[in-house]
Length: 90
Image (tube, rainbow, N blue to C red; front, side):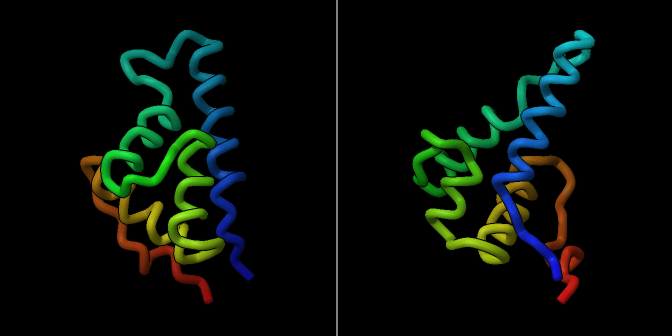
């Protein structure tokens, strides 16, 4: 069974950014979560006051629908597109 836990993913990305910052390797990039939260707000109008994961869960529901929304928004935010079908395991 696949778990689509966006909160856990957001926490892992915070840790990744913290690790990069600790070894002074974060620049020229800014922290992903802050920028992606702003992007989610801009594209969807969902409040990012508690982070992008909670915003997507509130807007699209728990589980796969929120994960698909994350993949679609990530495709828009990044130069390379990701197919949500790639993540199908059910």
